[in-house]
Amino acid sequence: DCLLSNWETKHQKSLEQLEQFITKKLDNYTGNRNTLNSFKSNKRYFNTKNGDLILGDTIAKLNRPIQEATKILGVPESWFSYSYFSRVIVTYYERNKANILNEIDNLNEVLLKNNSSITSKRLVSKMIIQVNQPAFATLQDRIKKIAFNQIGDPNNISNWTAFANATEIEKAELIQGRNILNEWITRQFINVFFNVCINDNRRKHFWLKYVSNITSFKVYGPSFTKSILKRDERIAEYIDARFETVYSNKDASAFILYIGDYTIIEFSNDGYACCAYKINSSKRPALN
Image (tube, rainbow, N blue to C red):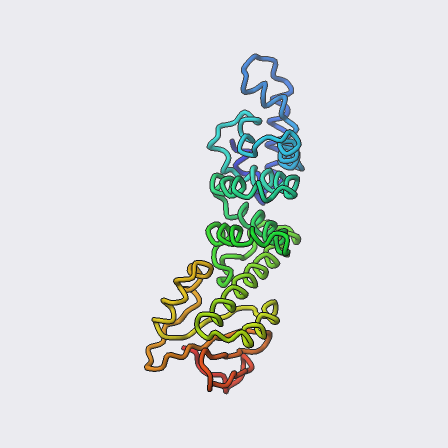
């Protein structure tokens, strides 16, 4: 229990001493208790260097559900939330990712059962990167919902900060996953905004060309425009965080885009100029 629940502790030497103690006890055990004999035959999975990776790989090769990991080890099912199982789950995904279309619902259940923000950040960022191609377009909405539920809105950087002891690869994947997710949301929002609020294909196609350069966006407009946008289920759950209600007699909405060092303000109605300001410019309007 102590070994598996502290598997990713920063006190690595203490963990290794605990592993050596357990291994020695198991090697010397000659009794007939089923649990201890199960631990003895599975001791390769308790190796602090790569035991969790071996277990994830083995489960995938045996074509068994990842939920059976605790059963294979002979530990209580409630331990599935322990930090030991984080990389077991990620390794299982890596071996089965070619079958992600059929695995996605199962992986979502596993994340809920593991209930760890670290596992969610590791796994969801990998899935986002994998499906960021036309062949997986149908999966993107599904993974987007999982990302929102398990990690949070990518517009809030604090939701997507790296966890303690994250490797450089994990940090890079987390940043890449957040950026891709932001791009998916921005693309959908542009499509809906310019269809519903403006009905201007010319401007829509113009901004879609630059969607990968847009780091974030926000809309300022009247409450009825917000209500219209919330009717579209593709973007409904992102509206509250990205729409600021303005109390005005005008029905115009301002679409604020952040690209590089610039704040760009595009408007829903004809007759308004699209404006660009340096983010640190004294002439940039106070958006509050």
